[in-house]
Length: 495
Image 1 (cartoon, helix red, strand yellow):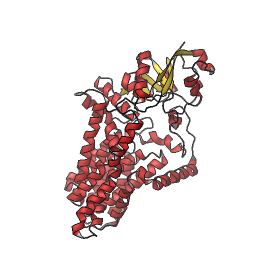
Image 2: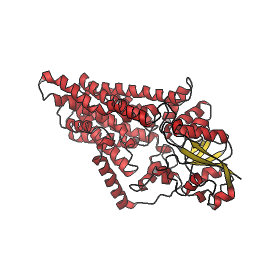
Image 3: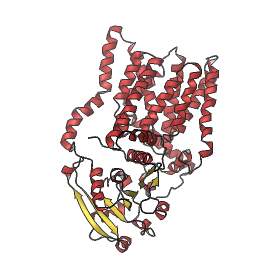
Image 4: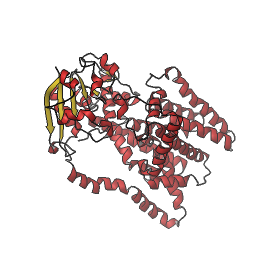
């Protein structure tokens, strides 16, 4: 049975479920926020503080199908295959049917994109919109302006939309200035001006507090290289890096992307992409596409390096890289005898998709021995245990992320960095649930909370002793969860 593995996807799904029930985009999980705690009343939901498009799509699906992990995954797979079809269409129109098929094969074999699909993460929607934009841009004449629709929707899907728009505008300007395309220059200019309209549409909403505002990620610029984002969603304060610190951070993170290209795509695909940049072609749109893809890839890497150097923030632009790589492979094989081209293509394709084949064959056998395939993940089991002891509508401080909210409708908030950060809010927080789930992950580091898990009978923290008492401890056996590990936790209740 399929289960979500991204907690963000659980939030999107719960917001969609509540939206269908007429509660707007609201969820019952939040990052740690003293302001939200102070205004909380039993049964309250939190406003979904993320871009709405993914949840809107799921809300439409939930009108006809149950709101569960399997339906979310099937929705994601639908967009995954639609994206693969767009990859084929773009590759075919820019070069040939063979290039389209090769590119689609590259895309379908990507474990990154498969995971986004199975979680129906916002990356899956963003990727689809980028490909839809590229396909519409290849339409003849004035029909190109239809590409404004997916461009507009990008700003409702992910915060990286400005990076895409920036790459697009820079590419358009460069082509306009340095190419000899005659009357087509007017098209590039008009498109560039039209794309600026997209930003003006949001002009009255681009305030720091708006969910649509790029300024919402401003704090990420001050997260130093090597720091954990969890520090800040748990109440930590941002410290200004300054120009020198930010420059050093960008250089360090960008270098790490270049040093470990497998974080973005299979290195051979990146090599083929670079090769394609130097292949001459009479198709002017292919020339624009390659320039645009290169600049956009650079823009996405730069944006991720300046904010959070997570490869997930660069992956949405990789399908365009894959299309160029597919064209590059077809062009590369033209240098060998024609009789050997098809055989060589099959051999190279098998080599490139070998990691994916191995993942579902040899690696799957290894996983079956190491993990309990068929058992639910630990976070689902832990959420069920919590739900047996805590009713809905009670505010819970926990390190289980959004899972208890999605699976059991409990009201949860991320645990703060320090226990004493809860002082003054004890009348609002009914329960505290701390487990050793992901305790070695930097974002989930227990710190002084460790005693709640491992010394539940003898907690030394004065605040906890004065305001909370032990309700129960629990242990989950390795045989009961996919991870094949033992997990334990403690539930405290307000006195």
